[in-house]
Image (cartoon, rainbow, N blue to C red; front, side):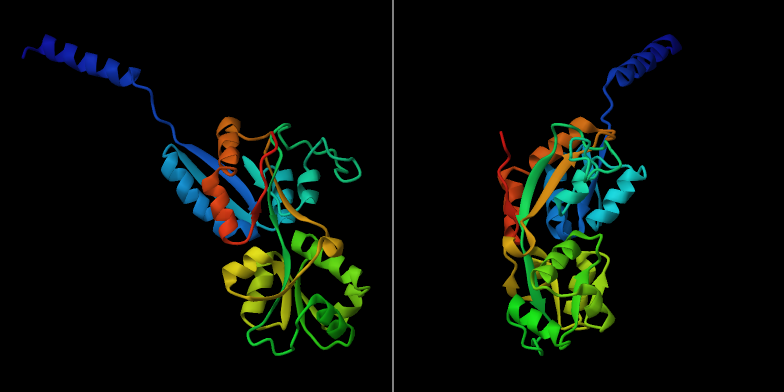
Length: 272
């Protein structure tokens, strides 16, 4: 083959390579409440198998911490909170009394209610203090007979626990000073304290109790602490809004719903 023909062949190959569309991987950053760690990791595996061009990257923490990180400019495509409050604080469409800083991070039209959870009372191995219900916990707290783990005030599970304490007319500050309460910065920390029997009991989500194999002795009613709804939304600052919406839509499929239900979440049908 002469030089001229070789050059023509190389040039033709270069043109073909240039014309071929590049397959660009999309990285989706999902901020999700710590209580969703196990389920969302399972869904990540399923989603990436079905969408090989997408890589899902998670950031799990308390919803309050995640909200602050988003507000401070962290890259995030999808936010899933364990309570409405943190989502409302980022949503310009929310009541100004909640979104007090007029933050505008939620992509309008994308916000949905994803799943419902339960607030549960779990006990250390063997239940040495014989805590059987929230009623019995309240009585033992009044008498300073138990050591309770709960979430911090800026963590949804902690806020639900505060409502339960108020329901029983218990003074959280007094109990903390008396050494009856210890805190965790997210629900996983509270779960660990109970698992390690460093406390007598803790208030966590039913899904975390299931994942950790802890004994649930009671579940809070809506009257005690309200409903535990997890909202989700694409963020207005997302670098990949279409891919983010596709992932959010996938969370409502039967495959994803079965994962949520397997650990105790109640999937919420998507409103049409």
